[in-house]
Length: 474
Image 1: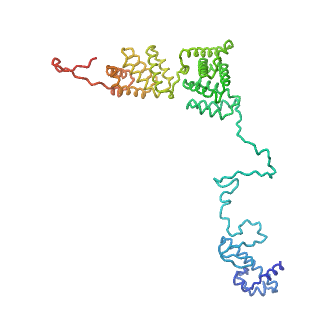
Image 2: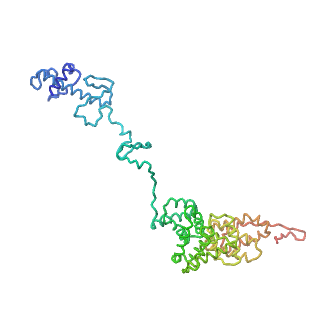
Image 3: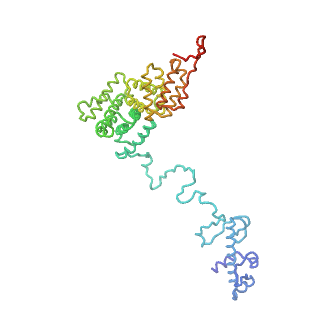
């Protein structure tokens, strides 16, 4: 150590006086005062030193001063003075200091800039791949990589969907069919089924849809028939349809427990499928003489009868009496008129209530009230007058027609009475009687009764009348 310091001093001679003026020695006695250079040249702690020992001590002081300057320069982040390898003070520049071997593993910055910025520009940390929004270019394959496999160059990777088993099939397809009953979009159902890997369960879709429709409304059965017609071809084949209806005929004994009218309804589904060319015309004939179950025989007989009636002009699409808001308004008005005419002929109010409920248009019941009152105004006898009053009373008591719909029906007649009176001259007189009778039976309230319009009376005064006003007569 002594020989190294002596060699360094010989290469870089510095006078002791200059050292004492520029740098602090850093050696303090017990009283806290600095030891002067004069005493250092002569003795240290009462021991006289030779010239070589004095030079070694000066080298130590100079190395300590360099360490202090290096520490101050790192704190100033490169600003201010720094010390070069030769011990010269460099102002305004940043010089990379030479660190001793003891600080090779030190993680502190030696450039004087410190670690004020986040790691990797804020994109560092464990489990972080990079900055948000950073796009990586495709990585080139290295043929020299020991894990490189030439056979994987032309591989095509696709997403595989496992086929549905029998346990997951019903849980997956049932919500799709029930949601279809609400929106009625067959294309959406086809897209959802195409995303599933149905596999061998593909032929189970029609039977599941029909079994759900048996417990639903008439409009849902109509939607199910439309769904089967749209799925046949793009998603399901004709053989899948035949297998599905074969399964329905075999399971009719179980379906009857939940739906007593299942044989007739399944027969209507079969007839509709043959009409829509989903099933072949020889499908029913293929079961002749081979059916032992009475329920299956009843379903096939029902389908055969409907197909024979369709040859005479009957449309199988109307077998369920399907209704709902998706039907055209003119078709609903026509069915309501037919319903009223059938009621006038039969007098069965319960059947009329059931038919009106099956139309499934509670928001359109005001049209039924309107058509019923117009029918009374256009009739020529008391029979229609009394029967319509009785029907409206029954529908009002059972809440099939709400108070709001009843009021709107009467108000529509009030608004159109001027036009109706052109074709029916006694319309005002009959309407007043009908409204008064409706109020007395509790069908309408007093406010709606008072809104009933009346035609103004004309005065016929002559010389022989004596000023007496004649009532209007017809």
